Image (cartoon, rainbow, N blue to C red):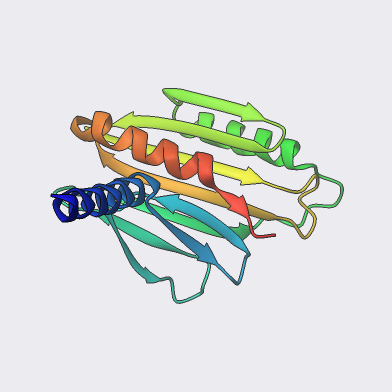
Amino acid sequence: MIQRMMVAAVLGVVGLSTVSMAKAGQSYCNSKYEYCVAFPNSMQALPEAENGDGRAFRLAGSTADIRVYASTMPLILDMSAQQYFRASQKEQRAKKIPDYELLKADRYVFSVREGGQITYVFNRSFKQTSKDGLMYSVYAQYPAAEQKRLQPIIQQMTRSLRLLP
């Protein structure tokens, strides 16, 4: 009887660990640009890009294109990250008015729905100026029919984006 209780207790602990791991997901850390992003266990990380700036992810049963990457912002003397993001906003609006948009001093986020597809772009700077600065991005393009499934995943990825210490 005591042995059965101990086995049940051990199985219970193992079960909790598995659930916690599933909820916690995985992390992709990029050593070249020194950032990390969390992604759920349900996603498959594809090989890192040849230039080492990031990687793409796949979700079973989905045609979504989800990527994280870093890039250098244009070297424009004395332009703040916010000024750069305002210029990006103006450029995007000239193409198509976003369905969703957020502009802050350190980020520009927008979403466009077109032809049954949603394109979501999250750009963030961790520095105050764009000179020699880096921009960290989460990009996703997916069928609008998959929005309810993919929105929480993309939200997790954007919220978890951080620099390595």
